Image (cartoon, rainbow, N blue to C red; front, side, top):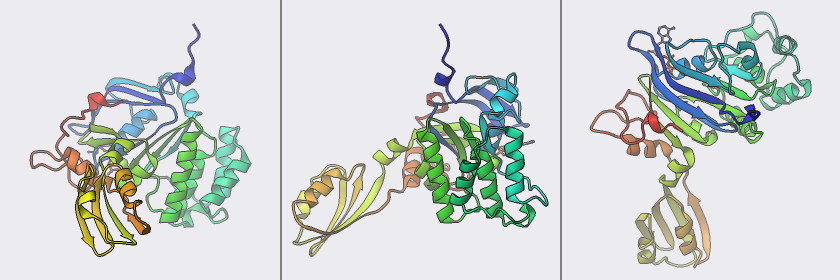
Length: 324
Ligand SMILES: Nc1ncnc2c1ncn2[C@@H]1O[C@H](COP(=O)(O)OP(=O)(O)OP(=O)(O)O)[C@@H](O)[C@H]1O
Ligand SMILES: [Mg+2]
């Protein structure tokens, strides 16, 4: 039977160890399917960049197996690299060249790059094409790095801290581009320091601590247990008791025609109860998944596996073994 290479996972790491003398990454298992966006989270030194370098074959692990798009990146280097887009965290600057010259040069080296798509990327990210790269601000240089990572429509896009230094509107545009990439069946692996960034774009988050994968969670699963504050104003005084009886609804406070409550998981039941009256205004706060993470992985007084600072204890329950 002929194997369908498109069915192979985008990334398959098994028991990967890169030991820099007690630091690095250890016994890492992670499988990323085609069309997924997976975000690596973890504090400084957790092993995010090292893992990314292993995937790119920039660093060779002493133990474990690495498969990228079904291939061994060590044996099939050029074949794999042609299908990869990469933004390093420490993007090298290309001297006197302008972004236009640098992107043209890279496109010629790669071949098969659609100039119209590169143009669209530059427009969407508002890239300054005509000034020497070395004179660009950090954020503007980062945008050029993003364009070169996406221009050849790679099957796997690997981005080490892609939105570092970008202003919020550009960050949102990057997130849209990454979702579009995944919607086309291509795969995105990125690293970040903040869960709030990853939750907007990723299907799953993989939390690293001291070189070990301590948790892999679906963002949707986090959202299901996430806690949101809801504020509503009705045309008449709400019946506090009816709201208190709803599952997952707590801290109900009624003040005249206003109601405030905290909802765990879906807001559906609360919204339906509200809809018995005329809803004058409704405000549902965005769930803070960082809080969920902290709650899920808080353990025995040591730092939790959230994404704030500090380093931490391995999480109970969701270990790397379940990293699928
Ligand atoms: N080439 C190297 N030589 C020695 N130690 C290294 C090397 N590369 C990484 N390390 C060590 O491996 C650990 C993981 O580093 P890594 O760069 O992967 O962390 P990170 O999660 O990307 O951190 P940051 O958030 O700061 O970018 C760190 O302790 C780092 O000092
Ligand atoms: Mg890093």
